Image (cartoon, rainbow, N blue to C red; front, side, top):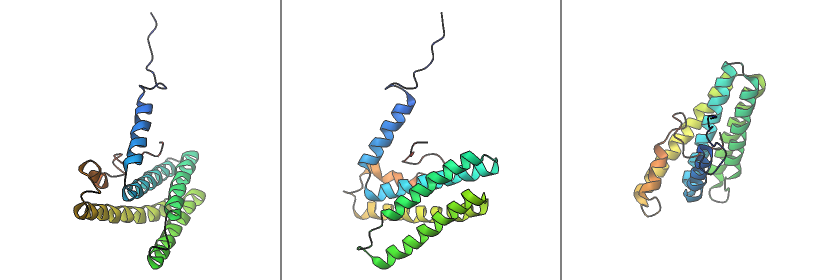
Length: 166
């Protein structure tokens, strides 16, 4: 009798369950929570890229930094200048700096550049988490109990609300 291997491609596979969870998390999240999820993803992929650089895994570093760059571009593209032009211009400059540091980390293989990007991303994440907590207190009908805890999960602990496929 041959040993059976677990089904890793079917509807009952852990990968499928993870994708379904991600889909549900994204579809039910508020815009603020989606922004937080993107920051979590950018932090996670920047950390992966940094670790890959330290291990001399150039391909792994490239892939991770490239994904972090795409997330930062998406954060920048989501800015709405008509809401507050001065604030949006400052955020756009910040995202541009993060993006350039991620490129430097990727091309020049500099962990310091990754650290610069991480420092700002972590600060942005903490600020955004505080904003979500404040909004949850002020607008409890918008941020129900089930969705309010997302601000506390950390990208580095692997408990991010958004996996971003990997």
